[in-house]
Length: 238
Ligand SMILES: C[S@@+](CC[C@H](N)C(=O)[O-])C[C@H]1O[C@@H](n2cnc3c(N)ncnc32)[C@H](O)[C@@H]1O
Image (cartoon, rainbow, N blue to C red; front, top):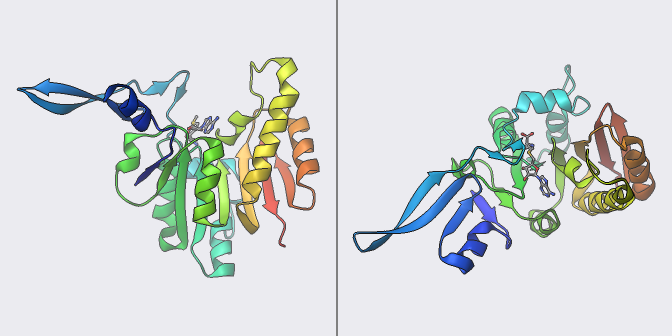
């Protein structure tokens, strides 16, 4: 199930040319065949720029975020379900084609209420009905989160990190980029349930400053912990 934001290529293209491009990895054109207008689907390139569409599996996410998914004992999702008795709302922020979040559903079944989010959308999102996928800008995602209600866990592998300085960000822009990234995370925290978590990874450039700024700005709202290049944010119970 895919939910498209207002900046979706589907809508833009419809306005522009009557052609649609519903998913970034599928090109949909209209052609006239024997006097009838038909849709022609064509597979697009399997990469966007330098990066693949993101096919990271659940097991890799679990290894990456070891403070959420320790090798022994219950993981965050199991513990949270045990505490609340309700399906744990989990959002994969920047989910790519959505492999990991689907595999979390395979593992936890009814214990989780899954969501996938990306600024790009993929044909694979429409396979099966396990996960609602939201295509929107990072800012517009917040509107959807308002409707979804408090989320227990937002994890993001090579996703949220894009909102912070990366290799090649001009030096003079770094403070501003960090400021905007921290402001965005602060907004995201508003949509996390008490004792819920946000976990994301960053590159090891400007990492100390990012962690410091997050700690300062989230003081009283959330606790910030860092483990290797992963950042964990725990919302303080009201
Ligand atoms: C490299 S893929 C990673 C996909 C997946 N998490 C994985 O580990 O395989 C980057 C993801 O982050 C999202 N993303 C990147 N930059 C973004 C931005 N500025 N705003 C919103 N989403 C962004 C993309 O839509 C994509 O889903």
